[in-house]
Image 1 (cartoon, rainbow, N blue to C red):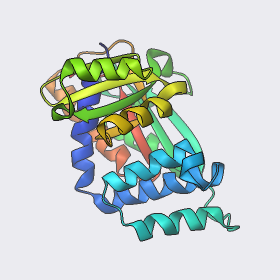
Image 2: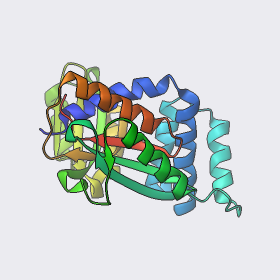
Image 3: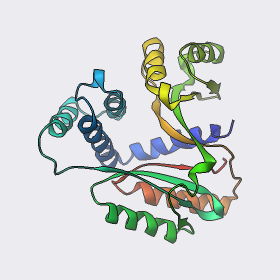
Image 4: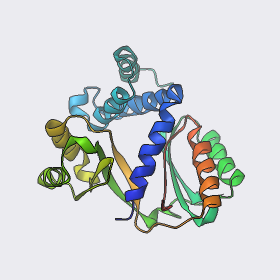
Length: 239
């Protein structure tokens, strides 16, 4: 399936991000803040906040830090209002790139993203300039040892997922975005917390790239994710 290698890249980059824990914590806290302000501060009634808290626990964020972020977001202080922004463009080798950000300063974030594209052989485009090459899906990842391939596929389909594929290390479950939270919660009830779970941009067709292009693309993605404003990046590069 197109996008299967994308999941591998997600897991690989997750490991790299863990080495920069302070920056990753800032991103998760920002997501908690936005989720709590946009909905109910009770995670049981706010699926987006529940997902953010899962990411926080996976990153070993302390309970006190989580509670402070929710309390601050639930208060009257609007100094930390963030906007969701999506940037699209082409990286080296004509690879399509989607960047999702949460920012309190659109001009700053746009300048940072444009600069990264320009520095590493890409070009920032208009909204929807590349997203037509992707599908929006829910993505849930479990370690291989969680269940057999057959049991994971059966469980995923039973709770409403579209597919489950497995390799030597992980099970990759995909579902429609409208059923993402219900599928994730049902699988968590059966297997425990996933290794990763989020809504993704999955490429419909992947682009083959050579080693030099891959090196430049990696530098671009790393530069983008150095920004506290950037929450996630997606490409249609195969590999």
